[in-house]
Length: 597
Ligand SMILES: Nc1ncnc2c1ncn2[C@@H]1O[C@H](COP(=O)(O)OP(=O)(O)OP(=O)(O)O)[C@@H](O)[C@H]1O
Image 1 (cartoon, rainbow, N blue to C red):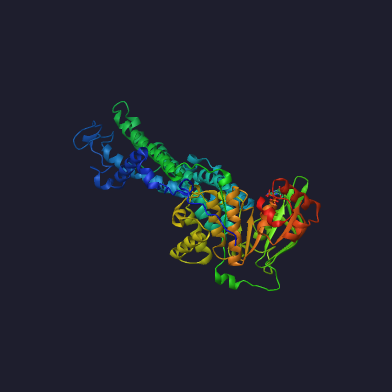
Image 2 (image 1 turned 60 degrees about the vertical axis):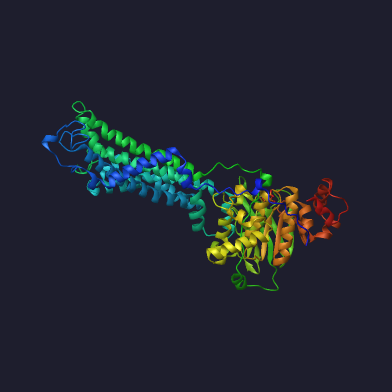
């Protein structure tokens, strides 16, 4: 076992500054506090209007016609029909509140769910949702609401329900566009590779990532619902016995020369209500987006993923002594191109035995990652496996259903990607993300999962595991992040670990430590490793065997030391010469070349 240098914890790197909670952030935002207080008062006024209104809002009295503001018993005066303006305002707040809640809830429920599904899943689903919402958008909003009056019977609550449906395309488009961006994030791929299901990924990672704009949009939807209800009432559409700002504005407008204040009160109330909603929505968005995160330099970042398998699952896996851990035979992968399908992996054959470490080496674009993705079952949707087979412990993976593949990912095969930082969800703490994966794969309690994660963090030699557990990804260094990802990858003792350029994003010192850690864990757990890299130095350091890839084909395979000593293929010789030129000691010995990693 090689010696691993463990750096002292560096506060600048792993300092755990607990992220301010949304609540705390809001309390410190004067705009949020002021608008929240006003909204609470207005909501309460509407809610309690039957109790606190001095008069029945529809009760007319001849004595109260056009009473001026400040008249005893009629604080804001009487309207042209002799009804108490204050009482009608209080009831109008109730109408507005109910309108906002119904309209926004319906629009959100439909728009968010459809947006998540439409943005996350493939083209067919997206086209269907797109078509449906385009259809909804063809209906002219206000006219549709008026035409549907016979159905809604003039009840503003049913009208708001229909309005919610009509407003849902806006929410759908916002959410769909956000999801299209978020689903390309590496931490989403990481979650998939770790075995999490689509519903869980959507509900936790994707929805959480897009929540800010949805919240702001909610405030806008509520304001729109209130404005629409008021507008319809102003036009005289709907029941006349339900007090609302629209009805009051209409009545005040008719009486504007005799008593201008009758017009002013509902206008001011409506303006304050909708204005506060929008301003509070902005504050909420800021609070949810949290403190501005200063991204670390890519070179220090780390990312990873994945999981492993509970002992019970491992035991249940069909294990055949005569089968290698991984057997790839004549694998072909193609992508659609402008002049037809382009084959990027051309008949690759490769085996990895139980407990063996195999390096898949080659220049950028040679097809290493696509080969690894085929094993994980996470090829891009447009990719096609044109031929060959991929067997994991004897089980054919090509053609296996997504759910069957998911049960293997994070249980039998784990993955460590290239960029550690990007593979951790910035919205959640390290501990939360690892605990989620451990709970998912091991089916243990939150408490047990937490302890498992803390033990793992200690095992991957992270100083002060509790602090890192509580940290967000931006609060740890790239080296730390890679250790975190490795901890996640080996959490359930996978049989095969696929490491895709696990040290590329790290500086040289940290690269050495990570390779040492991988080697130690491989020996301790007896797992096989397929190490994807372009760096012969890394291969020399850790691999038992090497497969050299070029242009989608394997051009040479062999025991590491022998390939280094006597490379048969000119391309292998070229790659070796390249690293020797870069300063590694000459001599062709694998161990010495490893110093060049
Ligand atoms: N989604 C895609 N659509 C079209 N071509 C793709 C796609 N993904 C990868 N390719 C192509 O497949 C080929 C092999 O890519 P692959 O990622 O396996 O390379 P690699 O050897 O892992 O190199 P690197 O280390 O740079 O990722 C490349 O030519 C690449 O352009």
